[in-house]
Image (cartoon, rainbow, N blue to C red; front, side, top):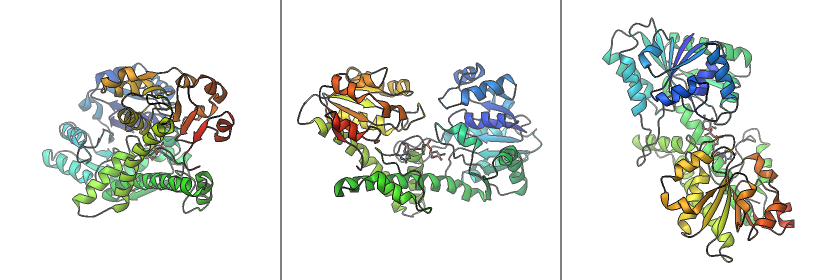
Length: 446
Ligand code: UDX
């Protein structure tokens, strides 16, 4: 099938490359010429394990193309995937729909020559968006033969290629049989290789709701284990053992029970706030979602306080070594990163402290984000490797769960740090080894 993907971000690009790998003829459209030129040079515009090789292979085979020209891109496409951003409004936190609206408006003048087109909303969009897109196009051009479906993505950043080829479910929100069949045909090659994957066809609004409900539930699960970690610290229990015991119950499940500094990224924070906004719009109180948002926000402050309290009695102008800037391991993405938020809280709470920071992939994105705060320029040093953040540091904190941080040479760190404090917000370092080397070690929930 010929598929057009509008948007080449964390959702659009992996989806386009994945569909090309399945044998479809894919054209990815983005209004940013610089992005398109980079993609045409075989360079990915975001860090995702395995994506660049697949991109190059399919681009050289002519299976995937890139353009800034939307009307050209959607010509004769059986499926047009909307994978544009829906960022939260800075104040109300509702999903900003302008990019979806603009794409739908552009499609009004582009599809009348297509025999039949399925427009698939893959972006996380408020419930009812499919109706909005359908009505907008139908009202402005009666000559287009199309349907709009909800096709939520469940890719995790850092694992997008893996998740695309190993889905456990494909949810289709379609209100016509014909549209449902087109999307089933689109994913048929994938389903043939993944017999364990469930193809779930529901109505469009249910599909839009599944996305928000899934992400909000996962966020709540993380908030829950983080609160249990705080409880464990008070009663002398070990959160790792508690999580292990809980996870053995199939109804709870082992995943997403890893305590940390809070959840971040471009999805959980955005989606929980958007769901809360939609609930309030409908005069319903989703108290669990609200508590998840509020608890996660407070956690950022409490983690920053933990780091500063560790050295408060030894130094008034501490040097803090920070391992991890990305919102999680496996990605270069610093959007709504707990690490970046904690780092900024530390700089605010102690106006004199200095930071030495490192992340295997996210340094450039972190540097760009901090450019908005020039007052921090002289106080943050970006290091080239993990051990370098320990040079002269009074406290070392781990904020992102990169597995390589577990291999940090603590013996070397003990020699080059000024004071020996560790605040491990991801339980990545060995408490036993640290204590043997003379460190004062504080983990999460242990
Ligand atoms: C999430 C959903 O998992 C994915 O299905 C959806 O399509 C997009 O949003 P993502 O945002 O990429 O994916 O990251 P995820 O791996 O879910 O982690 C989100 C945050 O929770 C990260 O900050 C991570 O560090 C944190 N986390 C995750 C925990 O603190 N503990 C855990 O056990 C798991």
